[in-house]
Length: 248
Image 1 (cartoon, rainbow, N blue to C red):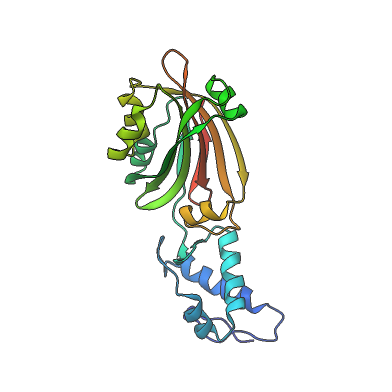
Image 2: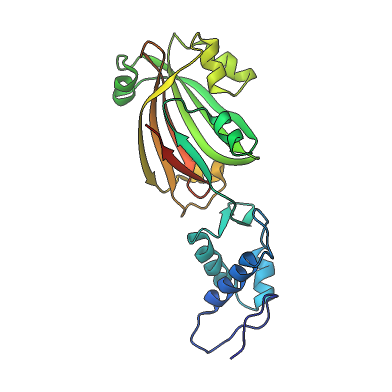
């Protein structure tokens, strides 16, 4: 029986072990043995196809297996990378993105993707304690850790109270700073609901992950010191890079 070498030697053909499994085992051995560092980009499908003497479908099946087991992550348009340590994202009464990321020795960053006024639909109006159809400011923000996207947040601020948030966010993508500019220096999370699902094509692109890999979704309501709703958020997390820890 011909063995699969760490350097991509010949595969054992006709021995009852699928070729994609042998390729996955070879790449897994390289990762486990320290031959490929966390965050390192793997060779392209074309390179792996030539290396193992198989077609792209076989290589792709091996990469899908490694991704499903959390050993690699696949970013659309960029390739496959060795999986990194997963962030512990704590959802508590006072959750602040930048603080949480810095505590884990990562560099936080944010980017505002879109801002617009919109009428509140029934469920959103009920969550914010406003009448249906009242205007809210909807802000879509991408949160990154060490330059890697980890969460897409859809924030909703009742108007006209938070009209100044739009201008504040044009200069600083911090949600906390925007609320402070509107007279809310501190706020707390009153409730959260967490679910999991597959990402939309847009979410997969923004989070640089495969559409077949689930995302974690947290619906949260933040209130000010008086208990008045200030922000209802739908946050979509890359499950391969983030695990949510709920604190009382």
